[in-house]
Image (cartoon, rainbow, N blue to C red):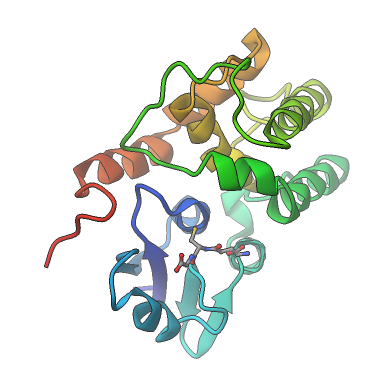
Length: 220
Ligand SMILES: N[C@@H](CCC(=O)N[C@@H](CS)C(=O)NCC(=O)O)C(=O)O
């Protein structure tokens, strides 16, 4: 047992939990999972019992408590360099870190107006539809990021910098949002999105989400 505990929210809607879980699963390490159900009277206390920021995911490793997804990724990348969370090539690694940081810090309109929901699809909300102020710009920038990374660093595989890396982990919830909200993508962006959705760990998370009760209806 490697002594990790990962505290997450429910799989259907917790996009940051998906990122932390993917990063930890990529290391191959065993871990215990603590799930805090969202939208319940006890949710706040449940998260605050583990998280100094009041947010999940949180990674616990012995006495070490790590919150903030990028810090979790960096911690795991140091412990498990062989997991390839960051690309080996320095330029690709810098690029992967830049786009991961951009994802982490930005795209508030997309997050607010297109929340992750792995149990539902909202068809008919095509590109001409009004998704909310700023969302179209976010989608455009994300597609640029994907195209640029794929062109410059993606030759070795199907993902942004070739192999499945932390950059793909950071964009994975966005891929699901594009599917949920029926965003039309150009063929290259769609091929990338399909590769992410077909990644085995992504499939495992989504299968778990589909087995959950609908958000708001949680088991006693
Ligand atoms: N900046 C944080 C964001 C974490 C975050 O926003 N987590 C959401 C879930 S996806 C949360 O814990 N929300 C608590 C709540 O809704 O009560 C990170 O990188 O981990």
